[in-house]
Length: 199
Image (tube, rainbow, N blue to C red; front, side):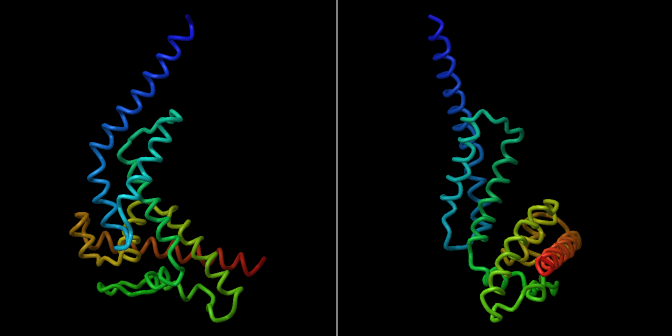
């Protein structure tokens, strides 16, 4: 007799989780899809990323992990999934983004000044890859506003005017946020590179 209530309780818990998942998907899916679509390469299917995000959300529900602000959590996971896409892209394509100068005249990261020349051989190519991985990790350490300004401008290739129109953040504020991000990332790469040379 004591087993039945436990079984009923577990069924009720699963039903409650399914109901929460369904409500969350109805509320957030379309906005999340639009958010992802604007931030990924044209050859990537945003539906795949949305499914990955909700799969991760489902896993957390099943493990009964507490997620405070579900909407913020979903967008953070989506950003991480998008970052993974860019991590998987060839190092050269990322370097081209980071080294470029945007139409507002703001300097790019100048990453090629900090990376070894790939024509110097296999060791140099390996070092470049390690540093690019470290750069992506360093991006995660930035305050969200700086990371977003840097990402949208350098990786997505949007001008500061476009970002300002999209986010409502003043142009000068975006320029300032990106500059702080660039200074931080340059310093981090120098530290990492120096550590590699000294080891």
